Length: 341
Image (cartoon, rainbow, N blue to C red; front, side, top):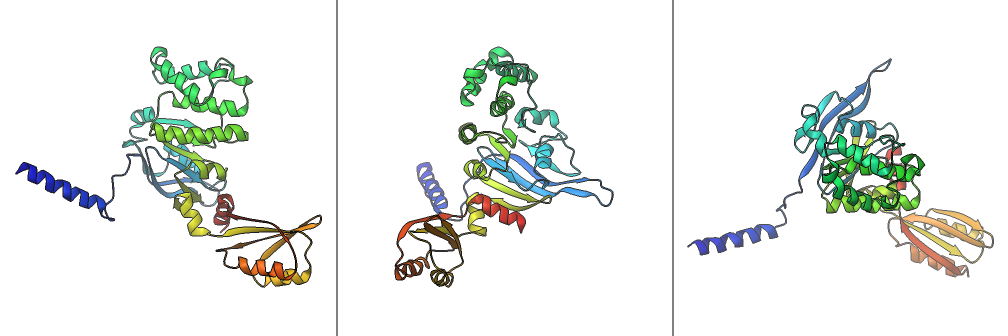
């Protein structure tokens, strides 16, 4: 009887898992922001920095906060870190209210805000990390293995005994992050982590953030104006304008929703005359550029259906094709158009 019941249960579970409407359990929610409001007094009427902001983030997820200067990104970060008292709403970190249960929340939270001003420049890299470990109540013996792993992950081993004041801006930024990780927080807040970094260090930061969030199952909230960086590291993004959320979702979803254009650039073996330009403009909207003895023109289209007509026009005018290149709209361009609109 029990064997028969067990077999039936297995069949039912298999059936449910195969159904399209069945939703598998989501990853554990680390952060919940619920209807946050924040205003600042002005001479006329209060300025709404945050106007009913709500979102959540899970373990193993990198969430990007995007928006123009003054949109409310840093206000959100500081509100989550309980450095700023919001007017109304609630922020939960691992289920604890970040205002009422602040002492319970702090062990779960790490933050790097306003660049690298949270570290001591007269101390070495290692001394800084040990100092912040001590502030968290972690003794040297217990933290040794963890600190060595952090130094390795952030490629700080070779400079661990150098004074921070002698390091480049990018290395100082890494030291700030290392200090914020020593207590293994579930939620890490990074406000402009790539600001002022060179390409090599910035790319290294991308790899580390992706690896750390997935392997350690940590939740990371990032603000940045570097759209390539955001597109690479973020699982989802939130676009904020004038204190309101205008979009939440994956970068691919934004690109699909707002723009699905192909950019095409064609280079020819000679400068082109007005007759040829006119014939092309009848097909699609073009922009022309001339470099020495060659000419190039580019255009955007939702699909490449018009491309054969353009190729026919080139052939009919006895012009030779030198190069053709296609690409999609860059996320940065799409983002700029969204915030302008």
